[in-house]
Length: 302
Image 1 (cartoon, rainbow, N blue to C red):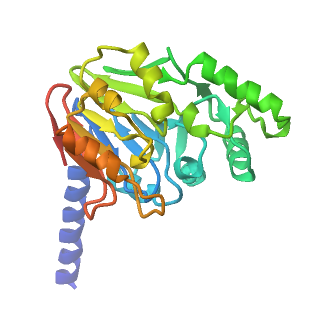
Image 2: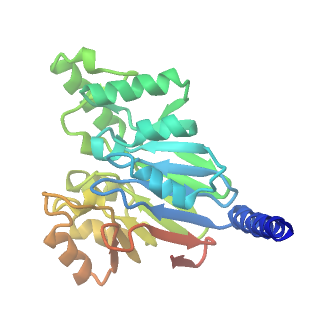
């Protein structure tokens, strides 16, 4: 009996020490952590800011985003401070109902464009029912989280006005939710933003592809090189042009992609990156999630 109780005591001590190590590991350490989640054919990225706050950018097509969050978040943390919805397509928002059901979401940022269909409508009603604050972001918007700045470059006001006109012209008023315009080309309304932490920059373009490339370049000509580029639209052949890549000059490109019938990432995009000497990583590789850690000066891949 004494041995049995001693065994329980040892197990309890070991468990307690493990929990202490996990707790200390997850304390804010002044570093920025970006995880490009392996969610299959879709997009999701989890960011933990240097001060301990966090953000989820999109949620992939389904519940697999929960596995990524389970790996990256402390198990006792059930709050996500910010969720950014880049644009309302299933491969970006399909996992959001699971997120909303399991986590307390502090605020939702989104592009001011709506989608048709019951899935989108149900999601918006769910968000409203949970009383989650929603803010629309676009060109000129900035969000600051401690030392981090999110600077939004797209969509611009003309693009949003076009979407609202298209919605009115198609007489689909019943598909308008929370005042957003409806478009049949949702990719063109993707939020595009630059995350800056001291000397480190990461670029998040959603699915905005080469129809938008020139508009982005013209408003930000001569920008500094970025460290990390999430390749637009899962590596679609229309995702980016040579001029776009020359404009951003990334040190590393990340392709969020899974098994698909679209040919993503397209040979043209792989060749474009290779010819420019830019290394790239893919979330559909065996290693899955791609983790970047930076102190705002140097950065590492984990």
